[in-house]
Image (cartoon, rainbow, N blue to C red; front, side):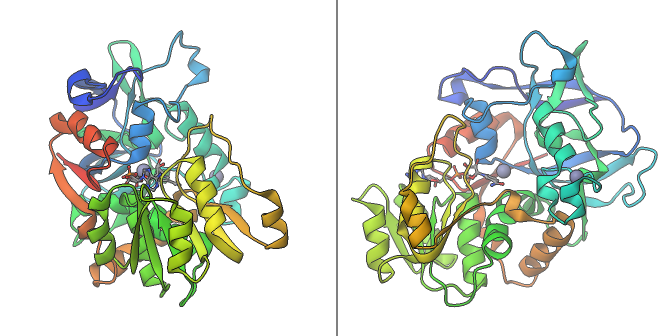
Amino acid sequence: MLTRAAVLYDTEKPRPYAASLPLVIEEIELEGPGEGEVLVEIAGAGLCHSDLSTINGAIGRPVPRHLHLPGPAPVVLGHEASGIVHEVGPGVRDLAPGDHVVFSFVPMCGHCKYCAVGRPVLCVNGGKANLAGTLLNNTIRFHKGNEPVLHFLGAAAFSQYTVAAQESLVKIDKEVPLDKAALFGCAILTGVGAVVNTAKVSPGASVVVFGLGGVGLSAVMGAKLAGAFPIIAVDTQPSKFELAQRLGADYTVNALDGDPVKAVKALSSGGTDYAFEAVGNAKVLAQAFEVTVRGGTTVSIGMAPPTQQLSIQASNLTYMEKTLMGSFMGSAVPRRDIPRFINLYMNGKLPVDELVSQHLGLDEINAGFDRLAEGATVRQIIKF
Ligand SMILES: NC(=O)c1ccc[n+]([C@@H]2O[C@H](COP(=O)([O-])OP(=O)(O)OC[C@H]3O[C@@H](n4cnc5c(N)ncnc54)[C@H](O)[C@@H]3O)[C@@H](O)[C@H]2O)c1
Ligand SMILES: [Zn+2]
Ligand SMILES: [Zn+2]
């Protein structure tokens, strides 16, 4: 079949993207689902900073080494998404046409050593497929003429239709508003998961969150849910502060207004028990580490470019018994956590609607990434 998709060819395009058009909207071919695969009609797809960091080259792009291509292949971006199952391939047991699904951006193979110990975000085979831009079984279902077009993070959701491994999909209740359901695949899973799964914040613990995009604001929501106090929210864009307060922040700090470490320490009797970095910048991660108290925990959520090194005072790690942790996809077990967080949302305990800044058509996607790059928006959702 043919599907309209947003395809990234070139990561050298300058901003504004509305003029340079790094994402080309075009019809490409999509093969039907093979063994263990599912054809999904996308309902909603969020614009996440990880897509943006692929567009601007900050975090690299998938390379299918087994194809021995002369240059990087084009890729269909988009990984925070929801949709409706259209057709299932042979061997798909738990999904049927008409089912509503959310994408998990790491497919879990179910049998590697990390899947076996209940840490599917570290799945060896899912990680390999994501680096290669293929589905879990190494296949590529998008083509333009004879050229392969890669699948970003097993989802390739900036397309009317996509084919995904069944291991990339989590079935959800049909009562959940489908566009907002998309956010449970990345922003909510990552931000709330970092607080409740990775850090396991307890009631009364103090928390600071650096970066108030979809991910950081989800961490603020998670901290509120966990009973943290105070919750301090830091950003360089004061336009984010009112929303952060509505979602649970007790104080806000403008990182451009002097030293944010000093400001956070002043608001938290000398530092916080937990600090979450949701910007993707090693300097901000160092600030997060510095602002935690003795015995404190710093959680790295942001994806800093691989060229950046983290510089912290090493002795503080030791004699202050600090902890530095990474949190990928909220240390989630997607089939446990996506329904769990959706249940909280549906019962008024997670104000996810507040994260939606606007809806866009696929044609407006380049301008949408300009807004994200400017820090002027939280979550924009492409509706199909
Ligand atoms: N760990 C994971 O599994 C995972 C999943 C999704 C996204 N991410 C990463 O998380 C990060 C945030 O993603 P997002 O979609 O929320 O991004 P976003 O662009 O919506 O938000 C980033 C925020 O950081 C703010 N910011 C920029 N510089 C700052 C500074 N020096 N101090 C404080 N705030 C600053 C921006 O103003 C913006 O509000 C990205 O690096 C993204 O790649 C990680
Ligand atoms: Zn994301
Ligand atoms: Zn695995």
